[in-house]
Image: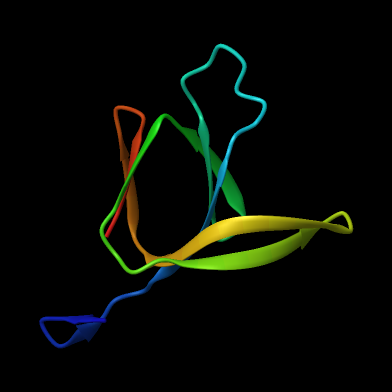
Length: 79
């Protein structure tokens, strides 16, 4: 992606439902370049696909996309 002739860096995101959220509103796990963020809602404005990752020998199924994220009041906005 380019903006004003400059190439923008795109982060990689793997997104999964947080099965251990308990009473928390943080029902989504967003992994940004390997760093985890817990959020209550998603607003994804880029193409997505399904992707498998392997963690500790266990297959995990994710939504995958590339872009840039801002977290606003617990909502992950990925453009």
